[in-house]
Length: 156
Image (cartoon, rainbow, N blue to C red):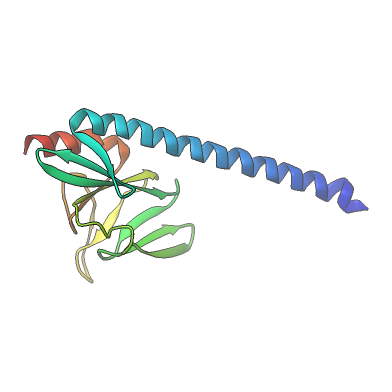
């Protein structure tokens, strides 16, 4: 009986909070995709090939990928296909073989995290990822770096 008076209202509040949070995250994700598509279209031809978003600039095609890393977590690229997401004492290794499988060079847009992104150069060396440097046939950038990258690519 006490569950009905205390547990049920608490459960309802948690469900409402979860629904609101999920809706806000989805809205933010759609906003990032819409804004970046407008920027991409202003620098080249944007098209879809086999469910992949492709940008063509100066006769070069790039696959556009979106990758979500939660706000208080950081991305470390350990190798071409193994990426690590770290946050609050836990670490998640993600195999990106399928994500990165197309033959085109990639522009990976990472959001909403604001943490510095890093990558391993070898077993002992690590560097911060910058939008200007391509590695493993991809650029890894934040949404606000997209226009600067596209300016460099289009003038190259």
